[in-house]
Amino acid sequence: MGSTSNRIKSAWSKPDRDTIKINVDAVWSTVSSSIAAIARDWRGDVVFAYSKRVNTTLPLQAEAEAIIWALNLATNLDVDSISIESDSKSCIDALSCPNRDVPWRIKTICSDVLALKLNFSNCSFSWVAREANVGLGPPCFVSVIRAEALSLPV
Image (cartoon, rainbow, N blue to C red; front, side, top):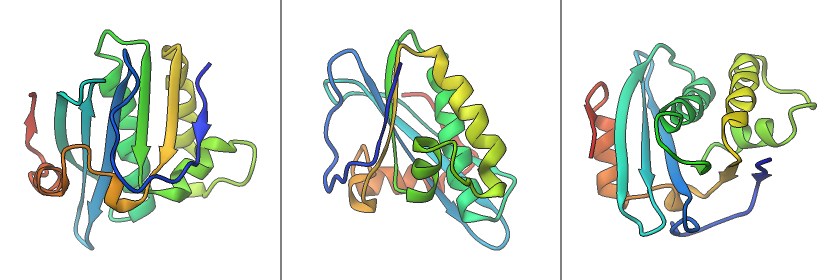
């Protein structure tokens, strides 16, 4: 089964061969939030890049929504191995130690993520520093997030 990792990375790196890496992020305001997911293969080629609005103004909940959305998107791919990277340490910690106290606002989402994880032979979750959580480089990642409800298959 997959693993959860808290290793610290300061630069984006390609995933292992036959693995899809999905970088997720969220932006929020007092009015709305948007999430983005950018997937790349072992060559570093883009598999998909999507963004959408979510119905929350809470940063932690938006970050958790990005992770579960990435898993749902990955189930449509014909892959057995995925790696999800997020700069939300609270979300990654909640997924790495599901028996400890998980913030109540993301408890259900985390349970659903751990259930979806079983669809893959290998599924890992890693915390990365904000500057490493880009996948495509900062300008592209920010533009995908800012597109909000726009979904662009690549």
